[in-house]
Image (tube, rainbow, N blue to C red):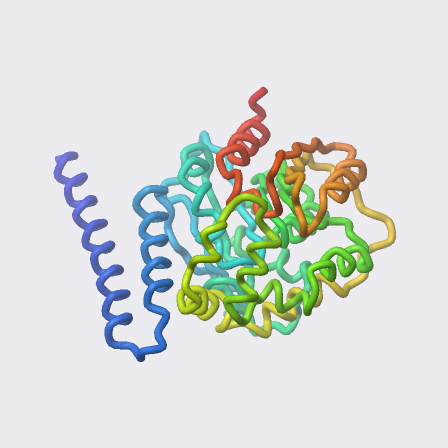
Length: 338
């Protein structure tokens, strides 16, 4: 009897996967010629990878009577003996594309909660607030709806990178009882407005245009700034493929993404940095061109309950250039393995 249930479960999953793939193929074939077929197919296969190999499930959460919609990937079978880990991405696509090299290993040790931040991926809001605080409130609201972080005491740990680090820090500051441990990777938390603008303007042009590229040239610049060793092959990728990536990742909510970047870069932070109480692991690449290592060291000094790990010959995109090393650091830190 048990074997029959297992066969039925596997058959149902196979049918679901086949339907999802067929639906994507039909859209690609019958939609107009401008349809970004290659990136849509790649995005579909990423979804299948998350489903089949990482045991993750997509789920949508509505907040404030549908004003805000958050899309999550969460562990399909949560285990009580595994800690909860929330993963917050940065600019550069949705959560699938940013965490593809990490979710397989991390899903074996944690109950994962991976949101698309508001205006990234499938998450959206009619609210006009573009602040980091709004992102933090939305993520906390979504997690509570999913049964994570609703009780007393620490409910989850957070791994965050770049823009996601700003959101994670804000959650830790406003709801300190919810976060047990925090991992911040390559994030300019604690920067003054002048420091943020100074660093970003080194790369020339409109900063928001770099973070939200319009053309293949812009996208190549973003990757060049973010990476020290990885994705060198991007120079050989045809422009039409990069244009498809831009269409899928940025065009739907382009103005909102630009507004998020401007709000982050132009707002003045508090004069006195607030030292959050949670144990915090700071990870930085020594070749980071976006937020140079000196800022990681400053963040470490400002957070008394923190430790700093510096990765040699790695740039801003630690999750892409050194995913295995980063995963090992996350595992040993969050699981408190010596």
